[in-house]
Image 1 (cartoon, helix red, strand yellow):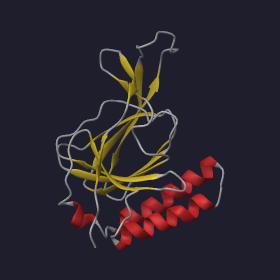
Image 2 (tube, helix red, strand yellow; image 1 turned 90 degrees about the vertical axis):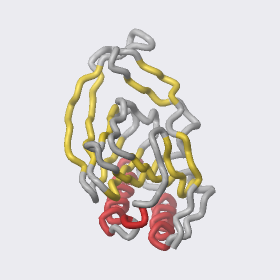
Image 3 (cartoon, rainbow, N blue to C red; image 1 turned 135 degrees about the vertical axis):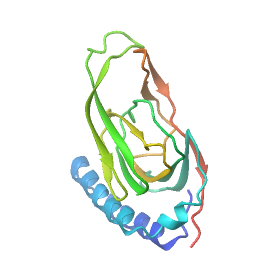
Image 4 (cartoon, rainbow, N blue to C red; image 1 turned 180 degrees about the horizontal axis):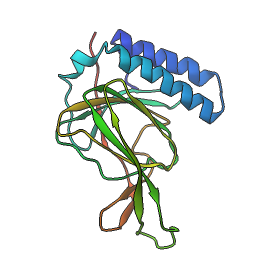
Length: 193
């Protein structure tokens, strides 16, 4: 576990631990996670500091992995230009809040029946701007992708569990899929006060 030392991040983690302890049904729980993350990224107490955070393609900063509830809080620093491939987060939920910069979120739906292993066809179901302060809730198996218009962006994630312990689906332009992608490389990182 990485214990946050920055007061704003510590307050977020403490609030999330309280929320996890309430034992709400999954949908209500994650709507509340989204609300709390929205307040956090909108305050911007870490926005200026985040401009010096390290990060690159395929990496996520590990701020906190909860020892009791298993949830994960991380930071995605996306140097420009960044355009993720369509992917899902398997069975997990993710709240994704833009702390700095602007991103574009694209949601997809699968148009085949999933009969052919290693192949999939998908189409865009929606695309929208995700400016600073915006929070998306990514439900299990939701196919999505983020891009940042060529400018650096930073997002805070709250996830059901620590990435890397389960296979995710990646969807490639040629119609092939990788069903065992293990996610981003995690970089333990302490945000100093």
